[in-house]
Length: 224
Image (cartoon, rainbow, N blue to C red; front, side, top):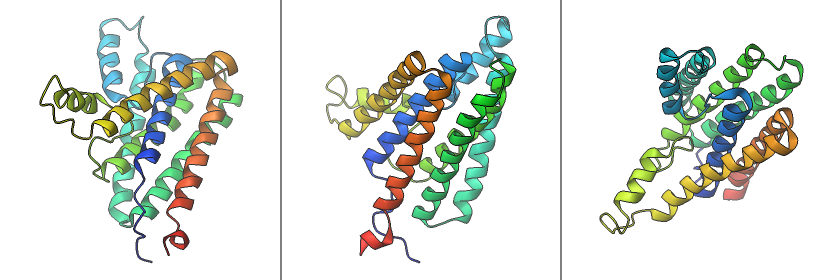
């Protein structure tokens, strides 16, 4: 079946995925404790901090997060090589991510609420975000990664009135940054008012809705 013309996620859809990333990092950093699921730069720094003072930083949890992210990104690299159709690739990747989020939500009700009991949740979330990061990067959409916005923030500043003044893709870049911050804010609110387990349930439901919306929007029937 040929690819439909609108198979690539829209900027709004990608911003939604960025919101999810912020939400995940808020849940993991605040709910699990000083560990990121999408911001691997932060985790690598925490590994360095933990090496200097292991009593203050979660060395094992952070190492698990980095390894799970690496594994998820690697497996997604194989996926993108074997599935050339962009829509099929995105549907498969988003479905897997939704399934991993759902497994995390269910597992949170049965696993002990201890640091070690959170390790399986870290693995599932790390696999999900690592896989998504690879799939989105292979789309080669400028200024969009849905997980890290350091480069986007740099480009926004460099092309602002303080820099070149060109304002290249300023709206897209600003939207990506705002989406990540917004997701983190929502994640903290969910933790504060609904608790860790329910926050993970909301995460899984939101991802499922985004996946369903993408499948509907890019369906071949709508492209006719």
